[in-house]
Image (tube, rainbow, N blue to C red; front, side, top):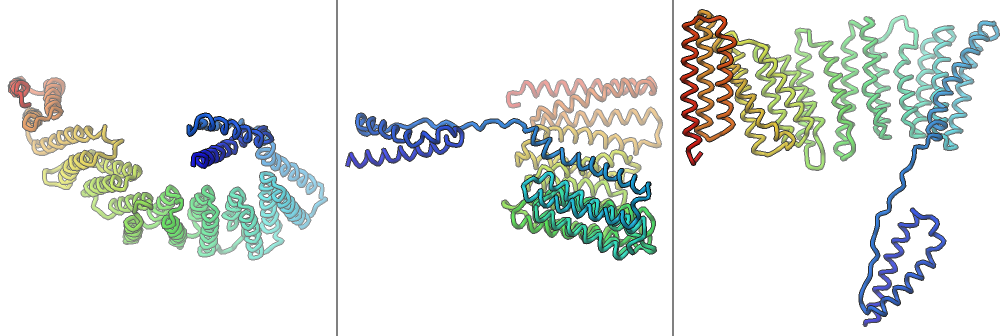
Length: 565
């Protein structure tokens, strides 16, 4: 039995050493020819050691293999990446100048010029395919992209400059050239070629002469092209191309819109943008369901662009088209976020878009007097949702919306005690402590915990600002001296109230805040009230503030000496 155990231990050690040697083989190629002898020698040594130690096992320390750092291959970068890209431009410029010289000399007629361009494009395309098959991808991509550019320029010259090709035939030839380029790009999985075809494809409607431009034909072609390129980019995981496919649709639509030819058919542009976004939404939803990468930023940017088109076309009309479409998209993204959200799938993008959609809807549908309260409430809800789904983006969006509503509220003065502005202030002053308690209770997000105390300091300052506005509104019709006297008295009462709350609940920071407000009242009286009020009012202010300071000092002295505090 001892012999069998020794044999088993020896075999396990040999297997371990073989694994070590397999790892070392990649780092030290010179050892490959010596590995068999090395294994035998190690095996003999272990056998002799095992016969002497009788059951004791040895193990070799396992050291991680450090991969050698690779220096930048400048020769590859310059010769195979940038050299063909730069010098293809040089070649094209040389050919162009030679072509112009031949035309000036009258050697080349108009039909021959176009034919030479098409022949050059075909030759470059064939050469590009050969380079791609040979593994010279950089040079092949440049040749294939250049072939498409030359072909489109040749067709453009034949159609628009020389009138050799009618509009319908030119459009079909343009589409055929773009189709060949897209097929080549998908065959060789080239994102560069897809982007090149995208740039050429979006320009096609502008390269066709038309006496009466058709908005449906223009928008339909651009939309179908963008959807096809988007689907191809997503299928081949071309992230840059997918983002460009979504964003670049808006460029030709914008130029067509500002041209003024389609003023009576502007809704066609809105429909094109919405169809593209709907397709991208379905694609993103499918990728989310399959737990694959979703381009959340591109989806969000697409919604923002669609909302901008919607605002420009419909927001200034008296119809309900703008809020109805916004509400429909917001509802769709809200229910999508609820359905998608799970530990395995992220709904961050859908929640962020729904939040933005509801914000835009509120700003349009709610009356201006109550808009601040609605925005503040939505910002708080958005922040809480961001905490629940653990999304930093959603938390930032909620905080920004809340801050946006608060700043807008502070810029709108209170004109009456019972007013929409007062209601908005009450909403803001109620939401801040609720958020404070919510964050403290959950102890998250942890990155915001150091700033949680700042919420209550902001709450105290906002309350002071609110009661100041209310006091000034109530005392608007009274004399200057009485207004300042009452306002300073309100500040003193507020500071004492804060201190009493801190003493009652034994909150040191609350007591400190009350003391700071008391000193702030002193500075206000000295630098704001004294230059303009009468001597009698100064006396009342200083007597009242001095008495308040002494009472507070006595109260805090008792609190400090109390062992239970």
